[in-house]
Length: 351
Image 1 (cartoon, one colour):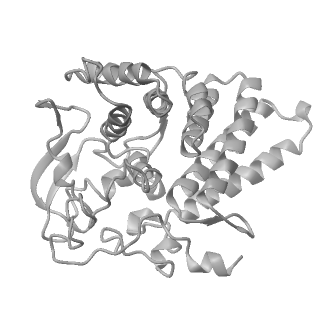
Image 2 (cartoon, helix red, strand yellow):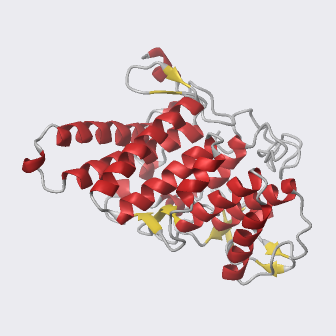
Image 3 (spheres, helix red, strand yellow):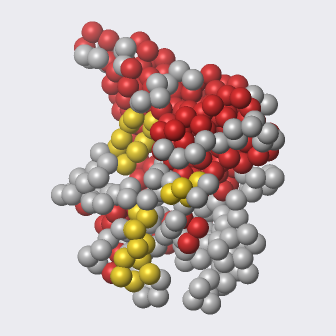
């Protein structure tokens, strides 16, 4: 149902079974739990006198920042959202909430002199501002983040709640039933001017995926349950600067960033004659993001939704321009119309 974009608001996957190790795709509950626990612990820490709590600002900055990242995901993925007892909020309202959280976490991180949390908050707020169309604000935040900054979410092989699900559901060579997806044809041999792009590394196997039909292609972003998951980075910040620059007409800055990424990947440069139009450069930034963050940070899904009604629309599977342009997949099954994730009906009725 997920692969066919056929998820509706009564689907039990939306709220049941948040233990990913046994096959659940529910991410609403873990994200909301993170947000709620972050808010509760922030208030609990704040209730003590400063003298009673060592590193009080650092502790509050930490829980505020992680709660803000959960809020980003809720705003980027869902068609609508409700916090606590409501009311129903639009994705824009959720991102505005995330922006306020990041502003507070940034102030606390600065007070606590935490470079890590400051950079983490700057990347998060820049991403939110990009989603809100505040290009100047997004660029101002992102330009403060060092290009070398990396923040990973750790994973572990023992506690199944900590398993890396990019491996477990997509790269699992042991259990066929857990090979939920394969890599689409467009990403199996990604090149730039005929040169293989090492940012998108995909390997063919002789195995079939969980549908017993598709050949399993594996990515290189998660090869075990304990591999970490990227959360924020200077690379993301640079691409935020590139998009903000391109969207506001500063094409030289966007070209410079794109070429730096190509140099790092050891592939030919972009637009050496500086002849690309503004729309060309914006489209290239979108393409660079899918290559830089192949299988990471939800970047492609976010771009699917952000550019849905623009000249830069990225088709979903089953739509014209996709791998299955006629609305039917390779098993002759019909695609549904799901794009953003619907808020579960049980959540709506509970408001």
